[in-house]
Length: 116
Image (cartoon, rainbow, N blue to C red):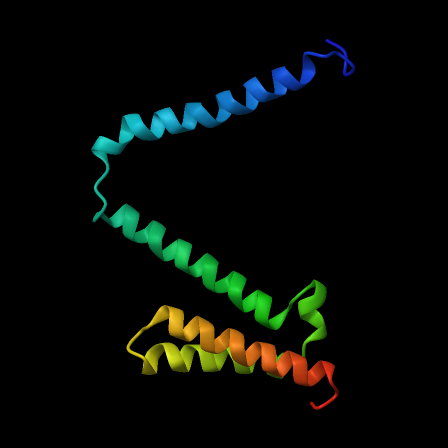
């Protein structure tokens, strides 16, 4: 089958669907034997939180794109305030996120306006 064949997109679609649905079917078949409170899932949760923490830290400390134009103090300050509000508001996630975003927007605007 050549690359210019009209069947090529259909072949790719079927191959992609097969790769996806094989793993989904395997997950459904094995899900009855999984112990969500087991040591394996505790380890998986820890690894997932560690990866997420690393990505957030990288975004704050070593950003790319437009975020790199914002000063480090603004990024760290907004994250610190978001965490502070989160814990002071009895672990209220939406309130912490809104506070962090608001402070980040104000500090970004102040930097862009030459006030910082």
